[in-house]
Image (cartoon, rainbow, N blue to C red; front, side, top):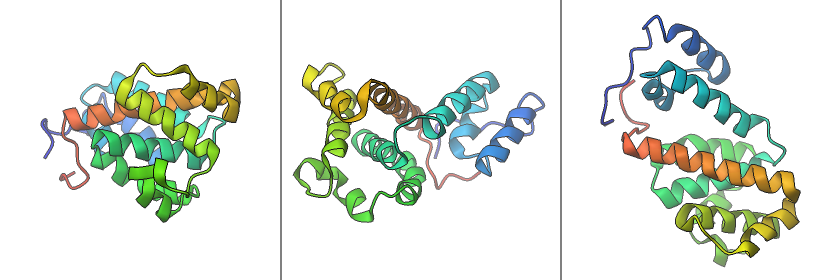
Length: 174
């Protein structure tokens, strides 16, 4: 159960953004129902996360591996619940999702995935980390890809922390 009630989506200030979210996402997920307490915040969040999810050059499978690893490390089940189907659709295998807890010991991940998962772990757990971790991501993805990977990891750490601070869960009543 969320720590705050979900926002009234029928409030006049919320209407234009609710329509946009429904048009882009099909429905207003719990995350956005909570964010709608502050429509300007919800709008900025939607624009930023849409860019991260749909407009970057890094592939969808790699993006979703980062997101799922962040969710796992931060104990954010709503984030994992929302992104597991997306990860599978983007080409992540169920075996990879199952092995994500112990990815470093698994043969299911290639060198690029390992580099990005190491960065995910470092940014999520440590914040300050050895330069070689970013160098491996840069070698694998180039400078743009390294920036996009770091931004994706940072963005979804923000998402998971927001979700867990407010205890937003998939089984909450709408």
